[in-house]
Length: 77
Image 1 (spheres, helix red, strand yellow):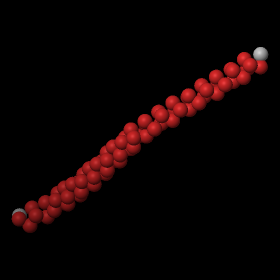
Image 2: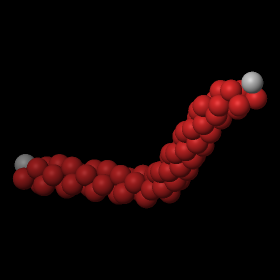
Image 3: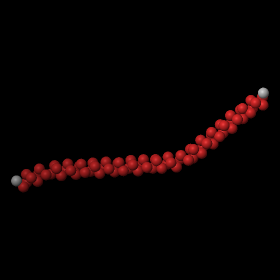
Image 4: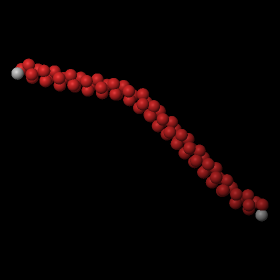
């Protein structure tokens, strides 16, 4: 009877070890994928920040040029 109990606990221990090894292998396989995804998100965020800066600069230039147009029209007339 005690032989069956020790056998069952050994099988459970072996199963846990297999699960731990499989988890470790899976995590090692996912690590480069996660690094790639993080780098892509950083590039995406950088592009959005650059687009936002260019957009704000364009809005400021447009507002400046529109603000200067009435002054030029008054000078011509």
